[in-house]
Length: 235
Length: 264
Image (cartoon, rainbow over all chains, first blue to last red; front, side):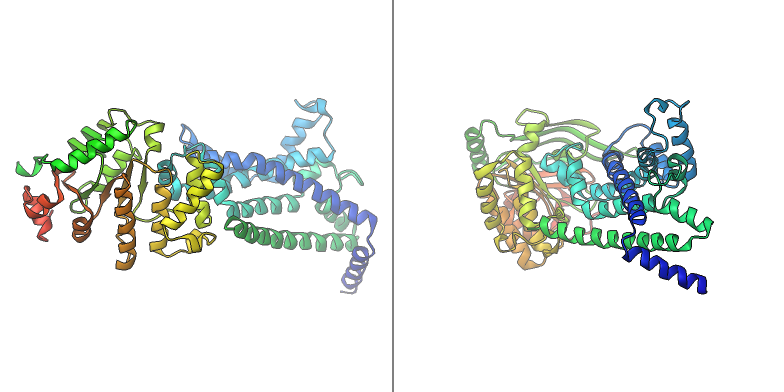
């Protein structure tokens, strides 16, 4: 109990003193996860929307696959990306292994199915309501996609948030493709795992607290953004 | 088989008015000509119309018991669903982007976008190619027409049912269509809201938009109809001027319907 209390006290000191190592880890984590979520949104939203409004052979199978991919095991993704990026892999020439870019790629693979599957559900629900009306106005199926995405924007923010949650909490994939190299690819989750195993609970606790704070702040910010965009849309 | 015979006894003045209207709009999509139109689902023929012509001008009210195929016919005419057989021609032209732009439809339950009242109308104007000052002026006119100017910035989904239906109506006529389909637009509204909707429908008809409307409300049909199309078991059994229909319905099914007899 004493150890825990002293570790907690040290953790608070680390946060408040602006410890350079701690904050570099936090900033790298945010850079990796936010970039991965942005890329996943750019890929996942159109794919989800296309699955929602498109009518083509194999659509059902693709939807089942997309839903299944939401539960991809991170270590398997890490392994697959590792094999792709390793020197003997097809993308080895790019020399991306053990770089933040490799971690971003792994997180994009993990997050894209989440954004796409949730987007499909949101867009499909709105489409069921709008389809006849938009067609009556003369809007084609393809042209209706931006309308459906825009009118589902609040729900889609939740999809992005779910993706961000997955990215920031993820440890298995980034440790495989990033290697947890100090000052290069060490992020919050991999540092927490490492420092806990070393018995350095202070840094692990400090990072854990910041991770929690980020999760709560992002939730609050998305909620606020959703309310603001709703108001702006009706102005 | 008297109940499957279409009574094509059009009112002469009505036709003359229609002809004038067509002459003044050479690119009009009217008349609408239906030939051997059928819709089949699960092996059952739900609608079969051997011949039906909807001429320009006035209001045609489609009546009939539940399951007669009225709403289905409206969707077939508007091209929302594809026919299993037959043709629908608009002034001798098949459905096309141009034909689509010249017609609109309002549904029983108004579909309003998750936007403000003005953004809902603006969306339709944008889709129809309105830009700049033209668009702003038309938007203002439509808001006033629907008595919605005071609630222009309000979220459309917070409007009452009657207000939402007025919004759906003015949005539908945003691009001044030749033809407006209305599928029981007042079925869930109170008398006051119904009165305002009917006033709008009358106004659209007076301004030259052909109204084709489904309703179960005999009173409403008497108030609005210039012509009645009566449907039973997926077929048009009567197409006749409204006064003739209510005074001397030619089919037994229509007589039963008017007198409140149970139609099966």
